[in-house]
Amino acid sequence: MTPLELGAAVRAAVAAAVHAGELSVAVPESVVVERPKAPPHKDKSKPAPQARGDYATSIALRLAKPAGKSPVEVAEILAARLRSLPDLSEVEVANGFLNLFLAEAALGRVALDVVAAGRSYGTNDAAAGQTVNLEFVSANPTGPIHIGGVRWAAVGDALARLLEASGAKVTREYYFNDHGAQIDRFARSLLAAATGQPAPEDGYGGAYIGEIAQAVLAEVPDALEQDDPQEVFRRVGVQRMFQEIRASLHDFGVDFDVYFHENTLHESGAVQRAVDRLKAAGQMYDKDGALWLRTTEFGDDKDRVVIKSDGEPAYISGDLAYYLDKRERGFDRCIIMLGADHSGYVGRLMAMCAAFGDTPHVNLEVLIGQLVNLLRDGEPLRMSKRAGTVVTLEDLVDAVGVDAGRYALVRSSTDSQIDIDLDLWSRRTSDNPVFYVQYAATRAASVLRHAKDLGIDVPDTADVSLLTHPRESELLLALAEFPRVVATAAELREPHRVARYLEEKVAKAAQRFWDDCHVLPKGDEPVSELAVPRLLLWRATRTVLENGLVLLGVSAPERM
Image (cartoon, rainbow, N blue to C red; front, side):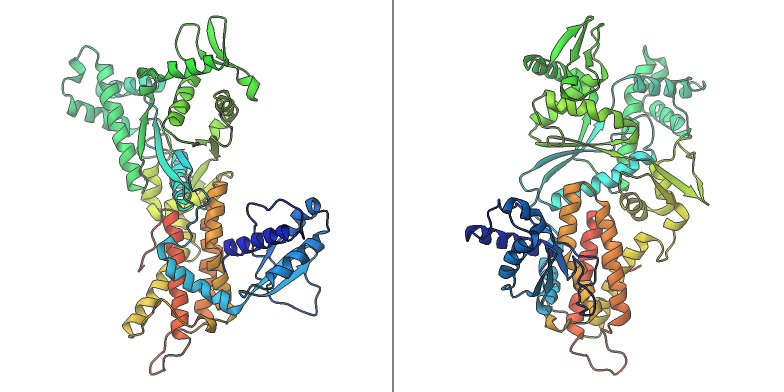
């Protein structure tokens, strides 16, 4: 049984106890069952820890107060029902905790379940029915994607895959900022480069500016002779830069369903529609000739100007129009990923959400990612050869490749700043985390390939009751956790949980299984009765490693 299945079984026990009048509580929507830190097997010479066994749950502690009983009393009521389950060899009550010990046959069946499910193992329906718009990267089209944006490319794409694995319908969206002062500075910089002039003081530098300028001249040879050459460089240059950004992201394994142009919000009247909607809701007021939004009523530190006194829209006007546009397109959850320099925007965005009558942190979520540093020889990289000022996506890929780059960016919580040691991540050794996980997947494929070469068939079923070695049990328990890890990572918006699980649970357990459990015959040895169930376990291991890596957008090679 997997942790999710055990959780469902415990919930069913609660429901049955409520129906029988043994407990007077609301049946919880779900019950969390986790692997305890204490070892699963009993040691009669020592006092029992609170949480141990193959799995444990604290549901009795949670229900005790509403039930008007002690945690131990609640746990005993539930334990009496759970002990009848054939997949559990023992149910122990320890200070209100329920410690669950799996029957050997039940544990072995994990391998059968994984193999039977194949590519769908790990999926769930926790987010079924949700329509999600996931906006990430959204770098200004004024230069190559810098390393901070690359973090969101890796994390955002992995999160989209996790939400889809949990049943959500996800649209990946890139907000193309082709409106505003930064585009004017970009156009002036291109024009200066085309005419051999230095970049404007507030403009953009780097070799790419000269490259884009020459590309514009190649496409529009008379650009400098036209009435408004800056507008030509603006229009064609932005499109060229956009094409480069899309190509770079595609090569990094990240593609978007929608590329939304900010400029369309102002050209289509979407800003005015948003203003009219908020006016009708009584959320706007006039002051000093400007039009303001009452964001302080929804927790913001001050009200925000939407239309300035000169009639020009303020920055927040685009946010209002864009959010309303997403909701009108049918998205019930809008998730935006922003860099650490945008943390001050969260309050006003949530106030905006509430002003439209929506629920902050439900209809709108904002995820903030911290900074990324690339290190070489222990020193931070400061400059890009091409961009001139920032380290870019291409710098990362050139140094370590796509797989290592994506894995390095996704394996840490976005709440923390990360330093990526390019020397470490380019090594083909076990201290390189992505190599360690990919090598485990490759080893599993190699064992199965070798078995086939020896004429040993690996069927879809086997006598898994023979899988009783401690290393087999450890690996089976690790594989059983995968569906819960996927569901939790999607719910908490934390793809790094999948990477850490692959490293610390599956790859590590697979290494110990390899070290201690002989599988294939050597020389003239006969094929042992353990060979087929152990090969089935290797097949299940390969499936979980491959499925997990796919969720992170990283390859699971057959050979390395």
